[in-house]
Every structure is written in structure tokens, then in C-alpha cells.
Length: 169
Ligand SMILES: [Zn+2]
Image (cartoon, rainbow, N blue to C red; front, side, top):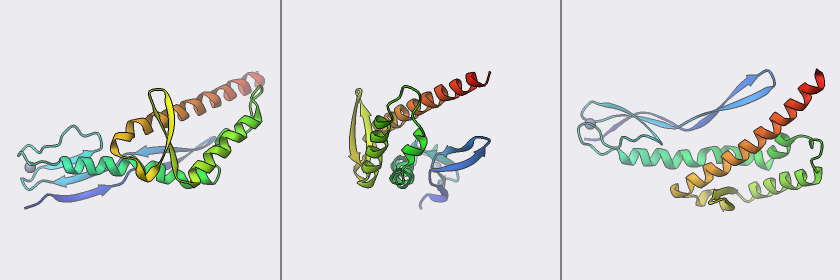
């Protein structure tokens, strides 16, 4: 007897068009199982449940989802980073922002993507590691590095929006 996999969905981004561009919504990976006791389970990377109500251990499926999910977004963005994604996200320098520093940042990101490196952030320090060598225990540090960059990009964009709307009034 074995568990039957009903559906397995990999983590992915879905693009959605909005008035000012495209937003990417993150859809986490999951696996839908039917236990041999008949119970149906949906397991995600954050499922606290690793045992079916009949006592069967399904922790292996949770680990599997975690491992797959951890690398998917980076695999997807690596190609975009190589093509200069960060330079596009940064756009033009804001008033008072040295454009040489922005170019250096964008350049560095592109070079790191070419050799398959991703940033990790732990204890306030940033380090780099090849994507394919990341282990599940690196995932919190990887998530922290992504959060840091997203926050920075968002604050920068908000500043830009605030400035351009105050110019209009
Ligand atoms: Zn069961």
C-alpha cells in the first residue's frame, strides 16, 4: 500500500497586468495526497502536519515540497537577472542618487547571476552561495536576503512616486 499523489503543483509566479506594469504573484508549491486510509491531505512547505490521522508518516512529502519550493523562484529569476533585471527595476537614478553606484550594483547582480550565485542574509551579514548548493537550512537566510532587497526597491519606488505626485500638485 502506498500514498497516492493526486496532484503536485510546483511553486510559480503568475503574472498579472496592472495599470502601471506587471505584478508577479507568488503561488506556493503543494502536493495533494490520498493516504491509503482514504484521507485526503494537502501539504505545503509550511504544513505543520506530517502525520496522517491514521498515523502514516507523510513528512517526506513536506520535505520534498520544501526543497523544491526553496529553489524555484531563484531558478526563474536567474535568467532575468542575467538579462539585467535589476537595472530595469532600478530605472534612472533619483535626484541625489549617484548613478555610478546604481550601475555598479546592477552590474554586480548580473555578474553574480551569470555564475549562479544568490545572496544570503544572516546575522545582518550578506554572503553569496551557488544556488544549486543551497540546502534547506539556507532557506531562511535566502528569504531574508530577498525580503531586504524587495523592501529597499519598494521604498525607493515609493519615494519616486511621492516625488512625482507632489510635482503634479
Ligand atoms: Zn492515513
